Image 1 (cartoon, rainbow, N blue to C red):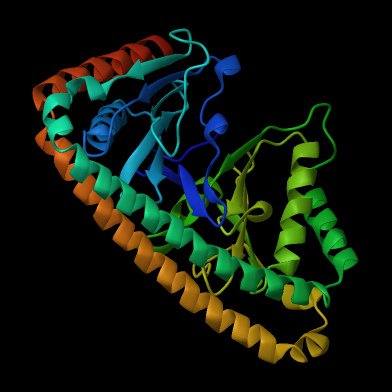
Image 2: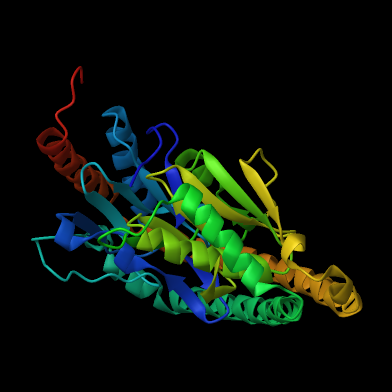
Length: 375
């Protein structure tokens, strides 16, 4: 997977809060069959997981390594993982809700047990308060999902309505033309698909990492489509044709419809990307080409449904704003949970563990990536 330079790490979300619960493509973070190694951190909130990963990230950046930062959608300022494709190595926060257990103990995965640095006796004395804060955080995440579900229901209705006035054949023909121009013909073997979230509903609002898209894909097609009927079909067809052409793709689903709606498609090996631009996340930067849903749509017919579409848009906006507010409340509750652990941590022990992990990565860097001119 091509990456930009190490000073601008590629950023994705570990997963997203969706109407159906947390969704994360954890199996796509590393490939045991391709020689990857994964360091899985096990520990509670506030125990220095993100700080540990940031220190390794900074050290490997000094080595000139390309990196991919995996961020937490519940707190976009916090790391949930870092990947170094050149080393075929990663560190991942493998605790709930994104639990990863080793499949090949030692051979591929290694546990980084920060919880060994927690003073469990002190924590046990505060168990009732910790349990209360944990329950409050979980309840807020569940409430947030209800609002996401309600917004998804309305936006799904608008997509269905727009679909009635959409020329599917014209979309498929357009995808075929783009594919011939950008992808070439069918390959002997299909490309590989990696799944990520490029966007998420977070305590900071609806975030999308457009910088990642721009860094990996200098040539971007922006699909201007408010209702998603055209872009959904166009992206799915482009994904199919890119894989047929033997190209590796990064598929990024919509967090409101993670099972059936692509929002972005990245093909770094050829520097081509496709993004959906709508009122929720506008592609308000220069792009190679803008494709408007209007060219595939019976606009006169769609205007007859204008009133309902306007209602759905307004109501969905209110619901999503409320989901963001609740996500911010959940983060505040999570911060309360962290306070107990921060006080009960052996930070000297955590520093020793961090130093060990940095040395592990330095050894990998020396073995696999013989840099010149390194200090």
